[in-house]
Every structure is written in structure tokens, then in C-alpha cells.
Image 1 (cartoon, one colour):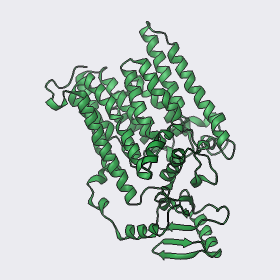
Image 2 (cartoon, helix red, strand yellow):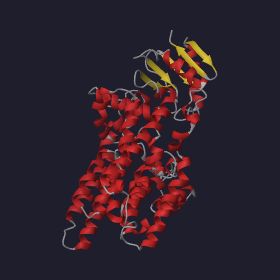
Image 3 (tube, one colour):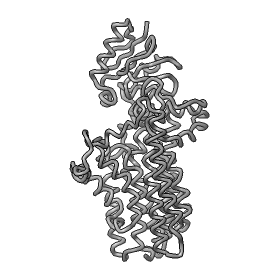
Length: 466
């Protein structure tokens, strides 16, 4: 496809400047939103607190034992994500939850770089600008960048570089960019296998290359997932198994005949597929790169966990660089009119979804105010000394993991119990991961054991062990 614009602006003639400039801008926006959300007490123990406890342990040369998951819980028994250990040196220098959310902002913004530069090669600077903005402001990435911290922050840029390398017919680069995905999360080995399959398919089409390297990469990806799920995770898991198998059985015994219905029902799953196709401008459906989404979509749609089906949470972040790469790849396959239509659709999706996700908080005055409630919450947290043991509710726990040993209030304590109990009963996330009844039961138990209330007003509760 010929560039859609023949007279680019002077500042956009250098694709590297454009790409890195956009990435820096989005990194600043992500960090601004994420840091402010933590300032407002909107981050949670699940998952920022969990990952901070793990990285904090790595930073001190210890195994990732996470009290928030349970007594002595080794986090590599939950998901296989040893790559988060690379954050340990940074965390050791700058301990605290903000280190993780800023690192996530930088990692996710990095995905803008390869896709913008590739779009510049394919269709010129204005299309590159649009593609860069569509990547950085995509609904999946924006939602994840503002949603605590998750290991898939590493996967987003790796997938962007790998998909771009595949589109440029650079199989070695694609393989090298995809291999670290094996250390990000156990299911991403299936995506690595998909990268290998596409490398082999490209080699078969070009005939002068052997498909063997791609097939080897596919085998490595499949073997890595099998090893993680069947051996590594059960070895570290307190129950001796992989906790997420039961989410793939449809809530009962697995039935192959029911699988097609489960993949397409309820209709919220179609919303996910529609938005993904629209992000790729629909024309991206022509690109084989979109097949890289299949492993992630398969386990999400087959799961009985309704959180995986929709367009909330962080689960769609890994799909965004693939969808945009498919769009760029498809631009080379269609005429200029269809290309413009596809770009308009992708831009429209970005514009429509942007107000629905947290990036718009940057320009919302109320998001920057300090409410009386927030002041009261900070005063409560200030009463808790450093290095104390604390049982806390979901959001309060995320404020404490950087300086105290924190567990969830709904879980039975070990030994004499925590020195402090801090609960915000008005926290809308208090029902998960802790059921309200469990929290009430534990609070009653602490009172019976003589815990003294220091603060008890407006849903805020601070108890101290006698």
C-alpha cells in the first residue's frame, strides 16, 4: 500500500522520534493515572498488594512468599511469572507500590514503538501517528495500565515486537521476542507456539526457507506450558495442583459437546470479539497475525469465570498489540479506500471507548481532589507503625504492603494474630476476595479476643491487639 499522505509534517519525518515521543507521552499518562489512583486509595491487595509482596521478597533474595494469598503461600504456585523478578533491583532502590505501577506504565507504553515504526514504513507518518495513538489509547491497554499491577505488563511490549517482526518477515527476531513470554505467564507458552506456527507457515509459503525452526519454537511453547501447568505450579501450590483447571470444566464435568455453546455464550463474549475485530479495523481479520489471539481467547471463552469474558479488567491487554499489528499488516493487502475505512473504524473505537476507561481521569478535576473520607483513611493508616503485622481489607492492604506484613482480614490468623486490624467497610471491593460474612465473622472474633478499637466511625475500623 502507498503512503496515504505524501507531504508529512517535518516533525514526523523521523519514525523513531514519532514512535518514542508517543511512547513517552502514553507512559506519562499511564503513570499519572495509576499513581493518582493509588493516592486516592483505589488500588487493591488483589492484585497490587500480592505482586508487591512477591517483588519485595525477590528484592531481598527470598522466595516469593505472599501472606495475602495465605500463610506461607509461594506465588509460583498460583501463576508462573518468574520474569517479575527483574523488577527486584529497582524495587530495592525505590521500595513501594508506586515502583510497580510506574514500571507497568513504562512497559505497556513501550508497545507503541514497534507498531508505530512499522506503520510508518507501510503507510507514512500520519498513519503511523494514528496507529501509535490507537495502540496507546486502546481499551485493553488503558484498562490494564490503570488496574493495579499484573505480570502481563511484560507481555504487552514483547507481543508488539514479536508481531511486528512476524509482519516484517523476520522470523529470528519474532522468535527471540516471543521466548521471554514463557516466563511471563503459563498460558503464554501457547502464544509462543502460535508464533512458531506462523513462522513455519511463512517459511512454507516462501519455499526458500525451512519450516523447521518455527516447528521447533511451537514445540517449545507447548512443552513450556505443559511443564509449568503439570509440574512447576503443582510443586509450589499448597494444594499440589493447578488451581485454574476447575475454571475450564464449565462448572462441572467437562463435556466436549457443550464446548461450542460455552465459547459463544453468554453474549458478552461476542462484545469482546466485536471490539477486538473493530480495533483491528475489521480489515485486520485478513491478517494471519490475528491468529496469535486464539490461545488467549480460547481459554478465556472456555472458562467458567465470568471475569474473563468481557472487556473489563486487565485480560485484554495482551490482545491489543496483536490486533493493531493485524491492522497494519492488512493495510498492505487492501486498496487505499479500504485502508482509510479501516483506520477510521479503529480510530472511532478508540474515541468511543476512551471515556469509558480510566485514562480520561487525567482531565477530571474531581479525580485530583482529596476528599474528607480520604483524609480520614490516611489518618487511620498513619496510626499503624512500620514493620507491624496487619490484617486489612482489600484496598487498605494495598496501602500497607510496602511497609508492613499484611494479610487479608477475612482469613484466620496464625499464632497470636496481627498487631493491627484495619478495615474500610465502605470499600466496594470488600466483598472480593473476602466475602462480607467472613469479614464480619473475623471482626467479631477479634473483638472477642480483646482487640481494642482505636478508630470506629463511618465504616472505618482500626483495632489494636491488647
